[in-house]
Structure formats: structure tokens, C-alpha cells
Figure 1 (cartoon, helix red, strand yellow):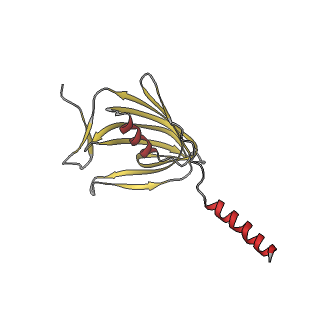
Figure 2 (figure 1 turned 45 degrees about the vertical axis):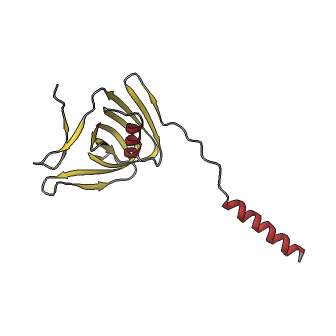
Figure 3 (figure 1 turned 180 degrees about the vertical axis):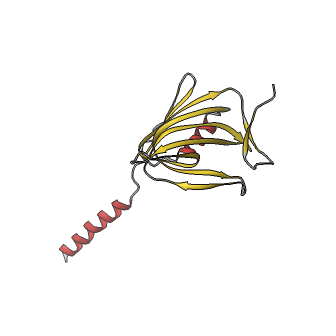
Length: 169
């Protein structure tokens, strides 16, 4: 009886402690300011678009230019003029050879416009408009060059695309 009670008590102790909350993971900052904007370093599993939108809100970035590189799982889109939507294509385990784009605003929300080129392990290149971008093995490094004017995107009635508007001065 004592042995059974001991085993039961030991099992309950292990079971209860396994279900207890673990200490919060230390939150580290994933960007730093530079003389012209920001350097962002994202880690495996990070959602690049969400991180950039969050940074844009947090730092109140009026507009910016973006360049970057790293390891990613991208989803590209090719603009279908007939349907006024993007035809998507998802890839896994690629190296982001080049990321370029801009940050503006649309309907008071960050509006990212990003294009990229990736290479697979066979060195085959694919590129286009980025619909989604997750950091793969390794990291992604992004340079953001901040611009002073707040730029906006508006839907063009002819094409259905969100077009960057140049302010009248």
C-alpha cells in the first residue's frame, strides 16, 4: 500500500509540475535605430510582414524604403488584371537573394509593398510580389530607410491595385 501511494504521489508531482506555467521567455528587441532608419533582424518562424507592420505602428514611420536578405518561406503573388487579385505561389526553404519595397499607409494602417527574389537549393530563381513571408532556417536582415513625408496608397479605379500617391507640394 505504501509503495502504491508513493508511486501515485510521485506520478502526481511530475504530472502537476509538467502542467505548470513556465517562466516567460525573455523578450528581446529585434531592431535598432540607425542614422537613416532601422536595422531589423528576424529569427526562424517570425512573420516578416507582421513584424514590419508592428514596427511601422510602434515607431510611427511615415514612409520608408526597404531592402533585405535571409532565409525564408515566401508566398509570391502575380497580379491578375482580369480578376484584380494576386495568383499565389508558396515556396519552402529558399534563400532571399533580394527584398525591396516600401512602407506607406492605407486606411490608417501600414501598407507594405514588397517584392523579392529567392533561390532554392538548385539555384533556381523565383520572384515577384510578396504576399506572405516567414523566416526559415537562420534569419532575415532588413534595412529600413525612413522618409519624412507620410505617403499613402489608394486603390486605382482602373486597375484595382493599391497605388502609391505622390503628395502635391
